[in-house]
Amino acid sequence: MSDEVRDRLLEAWRNEIVAGSVYELISRRMPDRERDILHRMAEAESGHRGRLEGRMRELGIPIPERSSVKLSPWLRLQARIAPIDRLLAAREAAENEEVDDFYKRSTGDQTTDRLLRDIRKEERSHSLAVQEIRGGAPPDPEPAPIGIPGAQRRLDKILGREKWHSSGTSWISGAIYGANDGLAAVFGIVAGVSGATGGSSFVLTAGLSGAVASALSMATGAFLAERSEVEMMEANVERERQEIAEHPEEEKEELSLFYQLKGIDEKTADELADRLSKNPDAMLQALAAEEFGTVKSSGDPKQAAVAAGISTGLGAIVPVIPFFFATGTVAIVAAAIVSLFAHFLVGAAKSLVTLRSWWSAGLEMTLAGAIVGGAMYVIGQAFPT
Image (cartoon, rainbow, N blue to C red; front, side):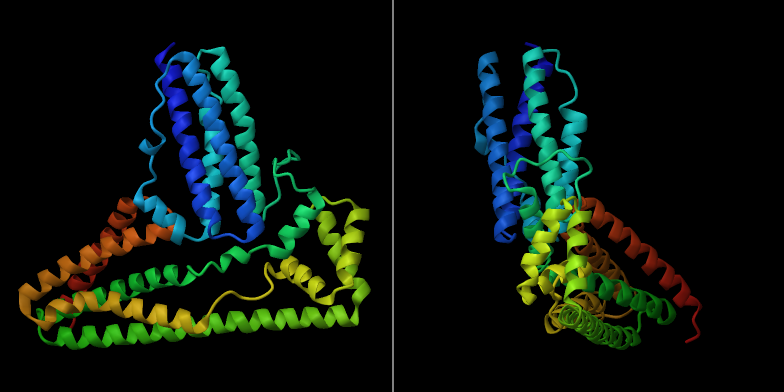
Protein backbone atom coordinates (compact mmCIF):
# COMPACT_ATOMS: atom_id res chain seq x y z
CA MET A 1 0.00 0.00 0.00
CA SER A 2 1.42 3.36 -1.06
CA ASP A 3 1.25 6.60 0.88
CA GLU A 4 -0.90 7.98 -1.96
CA VAL A 5 -3.61 5.37 -1.36
CA ARG A 6 -3.66 5.97 2.39
CA ASP A 7 -3.63 9.78 2.08
CA ARG A 8 -6.35 9.83 -0.57
CA LEU A 9 -8.65 7.54 1.41
CA LEU A 10 -8.17 9.57 4.58
CA GLU A 11 -8.75 12.83 2.71
CA ALA A 12 -11.89 11.48 1.07
CA TRP A 13 -13.10 10.22 4.47
CA ARG A 14 -12.65 13.68 6.02
CA ASN A 15 -14.33 15.39 3.05
CA GLU A 16 -17.42 13.20 3.43
CA ILE A 17 -17.75 14.11 7.12
CA VAL A 18 -17.39 17.84 6.37
CA ALA A 19 -19.89 17.71 3.49
CA GLY A 20 -22.47 15.82 5.57
CA SER A 21 -22.12 18.26 8.47
CA VAL A 22 -22.52 21.30 6.21
CA TYR A 23 -25.63 19.84 4.55
CA GLU A 24 -27.17 19.19 7.97
CA LEU A 25 -26.52 22.79 9.09
CA ILE A 26 -27.96 24.28 5.90
CA SER A 27 -31.01 21.99 6.03
CA ARG A 28 -32.11 23.54 9.33
CA ARG A 29 -32.86 26.79 7.49
CA MET A 30 -34.76 25.25 4.56
CA PRO A 31 -38.45 24.55 3.89
CA ASP A 32 -39.64 20.98 4.45
CA ARG A 33 -39.08 19.53 0.97
CA GLU A 34 -35.62 21.09 0.46
CA ARG A 35 -34.74 20.07 4.03
CA ASP A 36 -35.64 16.48 3.19
CA ILE A 37 -33.44 16.56 0.08
CA LEU A 38 -30.45 17.85 2.02
CA HIS A 39 -31.02 15.27 4.77
CA ARG A 40 -30.86 12.53 2.15
CA MET A 41 -27.68 14.01 0.72
CA ALA A 42 -26.14 14.10 4.21
CA GLU A 43 -27.10 10.44 4.65
CA ALA A 44 -25.48 9.65 1.29
CA GLU A 45 -22.26 11.28 2.48
CA SER A 46 -22.42 9.05 5.55
CA GLY A 47 -22.81 6.04 3.25
CA HIS A 48 -19.75 7.12 1.29
CA ARG A 49 -17.82 7.34 4.54
CA GLY A 50 -18.86 3.80 5.44
CA ARG A 51 -17.62 2.44 2.11
CA LEU A 52 -14.33 4.29 2.50
CA GLU A 53 -13.94 2.88 6.00
CA GLY A 54 -14.53 -0.62 4.62
CA ARG A 55 -11.70 -0.20 2.14
CA MET A 56 -9.46 1.28 4.84
CA ARG A 57 -10.07 -1.79 7.02
CA GLU A 58 -9.17 -4.07 4.12
CA LEU A 59 -5.85 -2.25 3.75
CA GLY A 60 -5.19 -2.09 7.48
CA ILE A 61 -5.41 1.70 7.64
CA PRO A 62 -6.38 2.92 11.14
CA ILE A 63 -9.69 4.78 11.04
CA PRO A 64 -9.61 8.02 13.07
CA GLU A 65 -12.39 8.97 15.43
CA ARG A 66 -15.20 10.78 13.64
CA SER A 67 -15.05 13.47 16.34
CA SER A 68 -11.51 14.29 15.20
CA VAL A 69 -13.00 16.02 12.13
CA LYS A 70 -14.70 19.22 13.20
CA LEU A 71 -16.09 22.21 11.36
CA SER A 72 -14.42 25.43 12.34
CA PRO A 73 -16.54 27.79 14.48
CA TRP A 74 -16.36 30.33 11.63
CA LEU A 75 -17.74 27.84 9.09
CA ARG A 76 -20.55 26.91 11.49
CA LEU A 77 -21.39 30.60 11.94
CA GLN A 78 -21.39 31.11 8.17
CA ALA A 79 -23.78 28.17 7.76
CA ARG A 80 -26.20 29.85 10.18
CA ILE A 81 -25.91 33.45 8.92
CA ALA A 82 -24.78 33.62 5.28
CA PRO A 83 -27.40 33.85 2.51
CA ILE A 84 -28.48 30.30 1.70
CA ASP A 85 -28.02 30.84 -2.03
CA ARG A 86 -24.33 31.59 -1.45
CA LEU A 87 -23.96 28.62 0.87
CA LEU A 88 -25.48 26.33 -1.73
CA ALA A 89 -23.31 27.86 -4.46
CA ALA A 90 -20.22 27.23 -2.34
CA ARG A 91 -21.32 23.66 -1.64
CA GLU A 92 -22.03 23.08 -5.35
CA ALA A 93 -18.55 24.40 -6.21
CA ALA A 94 -17.01 22.12 -3.57
CA GLU A 95 -18.82 19.09 -4.97
CA ASN A 96 -17.67 19.95 -8.49
CA GLU A 97 -14.10 20.48 -7.29
CA GLU A 98 -14.07 17.09 -5.59
CA VAL A 99 -15.39 15.46 -8.75
CA ASP A 100 -12.96 17.21 -11.11
CA ASP A 101 -9.77 17.45 -9.04
CA PHE A 102 -9.91 14.77 -6.37
CA TYR A 103 -11.82 11.68 -7.47
CA LYS A 104 -10.43 11.64 -11.02
CA ARG A 105 -6.78 11.25 -9.98
CA SER A 106 -5.49 7.69 -9.86
CA THR A 107 -4.04 6.32 -6.65
CA GLY A 108 -2.26 3.42 -8.36
CA ASP A 109 -4.56 0.89 -6.65
CA GLN A 110 -7.32 -0.42 -8.94
CA THR A 111 -9.77 -1.36 -6.19
CA THR A 112 -9.41 2.03 -4.49
CA ASP A 113 -9.73 3.85 -7.82
CA ARG A 114 -12.91 1.91 -8.61
CA LEU A 115 -14.39 2.90 -5.25
CA LEU A 116 -13.49 6.57 -5.77
CA ARG A 117 -15.00 6.50 -9.27
CA ASP A 118 -18.27 5.16 -7.89
CA ILE A 119 -18.36 7.87 -5.24
CA ARG A 120 -17.48 10.44 -7.89
CA LYS A 121 -20.66 9.62 -9.84
CA GLU A 122 -22.79 10.15 -6.75
CA GLU A 123 -20.97 13.39 -5.89
CA ARG A 124 -21.82 14.61 -9.39
CA SER A 125 -25.48 13.88 -8.68
CA HIS A 126 -25.19 15.86 -5.44
CA SER A 127 -23.87 18.85 -7.37
CA LEU A 128 -26.85 18.66 -9.73
CA ALA A 129 -29.28 18.34 -6.82
CA VAL A 130 -27.81 21.43 -5.16
CA GLN A 131 -28.12 23.30 -8.44
CA GLU A 132 -31.77 22.28 -8.67
CA ILE A 133 -32.45 23.57 -5.16
CA ARG A 134 -30.83 26.89 -6.11
CA GLY A 135 -33.35 27.17 -8.95
CA GLY A 136 -31.23 26.39 -11.99
CA ALA A 137 -31.68 23.73 -14.60
CA PRO A 138 -29.19 20.85 -14.60
CA PRO A 139 -26.49 21.11 -17.28
CA ASP A 140 -27.21 17.60 -18.56
CA PRO A 141 -30.08 15.09 -18.31
CA GLU A 142 -28.40 13.01 -15.59
CA PRO A 143 -30.97 12.90 -12.74
CA ALA A 144 -30.11 13.47 -9.11
CA PRO A 145 -31.04 10.40 -7.01
CA ILE A 146 -33.66 12.10 -4.89
CA GLY A 147 -36.53 9.72 -5.61
CA ILE A 148 -39.17 12.34 -6.51
CA PRO A 149 -40.94 12.06 -9.90
CA GLY A 150 -39.57 14.68 -12.30
CA ALA A 151 -42.75 16.64 -13.06
CA GLN A 152 -43.98 16.68 -9.49
CA ARG A 153 -40.54 17.58 -8.21
CA ARG A 154 -40.27 20.54 -10.56
CA LEU A 155 -43.81 21.66 -9.72
CA ASP A 156 -43.02 21.52 -6.01
CA LYS A 157 -39.90 23.54 -6.64
CA ILE A 158 -41.87 26.17 -8.58
CA LEU A 159 -44.51 26.50 -5.88
CA GLY A 160 -41.93 26.74 -3.11
CA ARG A 161 -39.03 28.33 -4.92
CA GLU A 162 -37.07 31.10 -3.23
CA LYS A 163 -38.90 30.71 0.10
CA TRP A 164 -35.58 30.07 1.76
CA HIS A 165 -34.51 33.66 1.01
CA SER A 166 -36.82 34.71 3.85
CA SER A 167 -34.62 32.94 6.37
CA GLY A 168 -34.53 35.86 8.78
CA THR A 169 -30.84 36.66 8.22
CA SER A 170 -31.15 39.41 5.58
CA TRP A 171 -31.05 42.05 8.30
CA ILE A 172 -27.70 40.65 9.46
CA SER A 173 -26.03 41.29 6.12
CA GLY A 174 -27.69 44.72 6.02
CA ALA A 175 -26.32 45.51 9.47
CA ILE A 176 -22.80 44.46 8.49
CA TYR A 177 -22.82 46.59 5.36
CA GLY A 178 -24.35 49.48 7.31
CA ALA A 179 -21.51 49.36 9.84
CA ASN A 180 -19.08 49.26 6.92
CA ASP A 181 -20.56 52.38 5.30
CA GLY A 182 -20.80 54.35 8.53
CA LEU A 183 -17.25 53.52 9.60
CA ALA A 184 -15.70 54.31 6.22
CA ALA A 185 -17.60 57.58 5.72
CA VAL A 186 -17.02 59.07 9.15
CA PHE A 187 -13.39 57.91 9.30
CA GLY A 188 -12.86 59.92 6.13
CA ILE A 189 -14.56 62.95 7.72
CA VAL A 190 -12.52 62.66 10.90
CA ALA A 191 -9.26 62.24 8.96
CA GLY A 192 -10.01 65.21 6.69
CA VAL A 193 -11.03 67.60 9.48
CA SER A 194 -8.08 66.41 11.61
CA GLY A 195 -5.72 67.24 8.76
CA ALA A 196 -7.31 70.67 8.36
CA THR A 197 -7.46 71.62 12.07
CA GLY A 198 -4.66 69.58 13.64
CA GLY A 199 -7.12 67.48 15.59
CA SER A 200 -9.02 70.33 17.24
CA SER A 201 -12.38 70.10 18.95
CA PHE A 202 -14.00 70.78 15.58
CA VAL A 203 -13.32 67.13 14.73
CA LEU A 204 -15.77 66.02 17.43
CA THR A 205 -18.51 68.26 16.07
CA ALA A 206 -17.93 67.19 12.48
CA GLY A 207 -17.62 63.52 13.39
CA LEU A 208 -20.80 63.45 15.47
CA SER A 209 -22.70 65.30 12.77
CA GLY A 210 -21.45 62.84 10.17
CA ALA A 211 -22.33 59.84 12.36
CA VAL A 212 -25.89 61.02 13.02
CA ALA A 213 -26.42 62.00 9.38
CA SER A 214 -25.09 58.65 8.13
CA ALA A 215 -27.29 56.67 10.53
CA LEU A 216 -30.45 58.59 9.64
CA SER A 217 -29.68 58.49 5.93
CA MET A 218 -29.08 54.73 5.94
CA ALA A 219 -32.18 54.05 8.04
CA THR A 220 -34.51 56.06 5.82
CA GLY A 221 -32.88 54.69 2.67
CA ALA A 222 -33.26 51.09 3.83
CA PHE A 223 -36.89 51.68 4.85
CA LEU A 224 -37.84 53.26 1.53
CA ALA A 225 -36.01 50.62 -0.49
CA GLU A 226 -37.69 47.72 1.31
CA ARG A 227 -41.11 49.36 1.19
CA SER A 228 -40.74 50.05 -2.53
CA GLU A 229 -39.84 46.41 -3.13
CA VAL A 230 -42.85 45.22 -1.14
CA GLU A 231 -45.21 47.60 -2.92
CA MET A 232 -43.85 46.64 -6.34
CA MET A 233 -44.22 42.94 -5.63
CA GLU A 234 -47.75 43.39 -4.33
CA ALA A 235 -48.67 45.40 -7.44
CA ASN A 236 -47.21 42.77 -9.76
CA VAL A 237 -49.05 39.95 -8.00
CA GLU A 238 -52.31 41.90 -8.07
CA ARG A 239 -51.95 42.50 -11.82
CA GLU A 240 -51.30 38.79 -12.29
CA ARG A 241 -54.44 38.02 -10.28
CA GLN A 242 -56.49 40.25 -12.60
CA GLU A 243 -55.04 38.58 -15.69
CA ILE A 244 -56.03 35.16 -14.34
CA ALA A 245 -59.58 36.40 -13.75
CA GLU A 246 -59.87 38.13 -17.14
CA HIS A 247 -57.92 35.73 -19.38
CA PRO A 248 -57.88 32.33 -17.65
CA GLU A 249 -57.18 30.29 -20.81
CA GLU A 250 -54.22 32.42 -21.83
CA GLU A 251 -52.75 32.25 -18.35
CA LYS A 252 -53.22 28.48 -18.24
CA GLU A 253 -51.38 28.17 -21.55
CA GLU A 254 -48.63 30.43 -20.25
CA LEU A 255 -48.16 28.24 -17.18
CA SER A 256 -48.02 25.12 -19.34
CA LEU A 257 -45.33 26.71 -21.50
CA PHE A 258 -43.26 27.51 -18.39
CA TYR A 259 -43.38 23.84 -17.45
CA GLN A 260 -42.51 22.72 -20.97
CA LEU A 261 -39.44 24.98 -20.96
CA LYS A 262 -38.33 23.14 -17.85
CA GLY A 263 -38.34 19.83 -19.70
CA ILE A 264 -41.85 18.51 -18.89
CA ASP A 265 -43.64 16.98 -21.87
CA GLU A 266 -46.53 18.97 -23.31
CA LYS A 267 -49.27 16.59 -22.18
CA THR A 268 -48.10 16.50 -18.57
CA ALA A 269 -47.53 20.27 -18.54
CA ASP A 270 -51.08 20.87 -19.83
CA GLU A 271 -52.50 18.54 -17.18
CA LEU A 272 -50.62 20.32 -14.39
CA ALA A 273 -51.68 23.74 -15.63
CA ASP A 274 -55.30 22.57 -15.97
CA ARG A 275 -55.26 21.14 -12.45
CA LEU A 276 -53.88 24.38 -11.02
CA SER A 277 -56.36 26.50 -12.97
CA LYS A 278 -59.16 24.99 -10.86
CA ASN A 279 -57.65 26.76 -7.85
CA PRO A 280 -56.97 30.44 -8.74
CA ASP A 281 -54.82 31.04 -5.67
CA ALA A 282 -52.58 28.06 -6.45
CA MET A 283 -52.32 29.16 -10.07
CA LEU A 284 -51.42 32.68 -8.95
CA GLN A 285 -48.64 31.33 -6.76
CA ALA A 286 -47.24 29.22 -9.59
CA LEU A 287 -47.31 32.04 -12.15
CA ALA A 288 -45.91 34.60 -9.72
CA ALA A 289 -43.10 32.24 -8.80
CA GLU A 290 -42.25 31.76 -12.48
CA GLU A 291 -42.47 35.41 -13.51
CA PHE A 292 -41.25 37.23 -10.39
CA GLY A 293 -39.23 34.56 -8.58
CA THR A 294 -41.50 34.66 -5.52
CA VAL A 295 -45.07 35.40 -4.47
CA LYS A 296 -44.29 38.24 -2.10
CA SER A 297 -41.31 40.18 -0.86
CA SER A 298 -39.66 38.76 2.24
CA GLY A 299 -38.31 42.13 3.40
CA ASP A 300 -39.50 44.02 6.46
CA PRO A 301 -39.07 47.81 5.99
CA LYS A 302 -39.04 48.57 9.72
CA GLN A 303 -36.57 45.82 10.50
CA ALA A 304 -34.32 46.96 7.64
CA ALA A 305 -34.45 50.57 8.84
CA VAL A 306 -33.60 49.71 12.44
CA ALA A 307 -30.77 47.35 11.48
CA ALA A 308 -29.26 49.77 8.97
CA GLY A 309 -29.62 52.82 11.23
CA ILE A 310 -28.19 51.28 14.40
CA SER A 311 -25.34 49.45 12.67
CA THR A 312 -24.36 52.52 10.65
CA GLY A 313 -24.43 54.68 13.77
CA LEU A 314 -22.29 52.20 15.72
CA GLY A 315 -19.75 51.97 12.92
CA ALA A 316 -19.71 55.71 12.39
CA ILE A 317 -19.12 56.58 16.06
CA VAL A 318 -15.91 54.54 16.33
CA PRO A 319 -13.55 57.12 14.72
CA VAL A 320 -15.06 59.87 16.87
CA ILE A 321 -14.59 58.19 20.28
CA PRO A 322 -10.97 59.37 20.94
CA PHE A 323 -12.03 63.00 20.46
CA PHE A 324 -14.38 62.74 23.44
CA PHE A 325 -11.29 62.47 25.63
CA ALA A 326 -8.46 64.25 23.82
CA THR A 327 -7.50 66.52 20.94
CA GLY A 328 -4.41 67.03 18.84
CA THR A 329 -1.93 64.37 17.76
CA VAL A 330 -2.88 61.94 20.54
CA ALA A 331 -6.52 61.90 19.44
CA ILE A 332 -5.60 61.62 15.75
CA VAL A 333 -3.32 58.61 16.33
CA ALA A 334 -5.86 56.95 18.63
CA ALA A 335 -8.65 57.51 16.11
CA ALA A 336 -6.54 55.97 13.35
CA ILE A 337 -5.72 52.90 15.46
CA VAL A 338 -9.25 52.17 16.65
CA SER A 339 -10.70 52.90 13.19
CA LEU A 340 -8.32 50.58 11.36
CA PHE A 341 -8.92 47.86 13.95
CA ALA A 342 -12.68 48.34 13.46
CA HIS A 343 -12.16 48.15 9.69
CA PHE A 344 -10.54 44.75 10.15
CA LEU A 345 -13.39 43.49 12.35
CA VAL A 346 -16.06 44.71 9.92
CA GLY A 347 -14.20 43.18 7.00
CA ALA A 348 -13.96 39.87 8.85
CA ALA A 349 -17.67 40.07 9.68
CA LYS A 350 -18.49 40.62 5.98
CA SER A 351 -16.95 37.23 5.23
CA LEU A 352 -19.89 35.69 7.10
CA VAL A 353 -22.12 36.64 4.18
CA THR A 354 -19.57 36.65 1.35
CA LEU A 355 -17.98 33.32 2.42
CA ARG A 356 -14.49 34.69 1.85
CA SER A 357 -11.58 34.00 4.18
CA TRP A 358 -12.11 36.15 7.29
CA TRP A 359 -8.51 37.29 7.53
CA SER A 360 -8.20 38.26 3.85
CA ALA A 361 -11.51 40.15 4.00
CA GLY A 362 -10.37 41.89 7.18
CA LEU A 363 -6.99 42.88 5.75
CA GLU A 364 -8.60 44.13 2.55
CA MET A 365 -10.98 46.32 4.53
CA THR A 366 -8.12 47.59 6.70
CA LEU A 367 -6.08 48.52 3.62
CA ALA A 368 -9.06 50.35 2.14
CA GLY A 369 -9.54 52.26 5.39
CA ALA A 370 -5.85 53.20 5.52
CA ILE A 371 -5.97 54.52 1.95
CA VAL A 372 -9.14 56.55 2.56
CA GLY A 373 -7.96 57.90 5.91
CA GLY A 374 -4.49 58.78 4.66
CA ALA A 375 -5.79 60.46 1.52
CA MET A 376 -8.37 62.50 3.43
CA TYR A 377 -5.79 63.59 6.02
CA VAL A 378 -3.47 64.87 3.29
CA ILE A 379 -6.38 66.58 1.49
CA GLY A 380 -7.53 68.07 4.80
CA GLN A 381 -4.18 69.73 5.29
CA ALA A 382 -4.82 71.67 2.12
CA PHE A 383 -8.25 72.85 3.28
CA PRO A 384 -8.51 76.49 4.37
CA THR A 385 -9.31 76.85 8.07
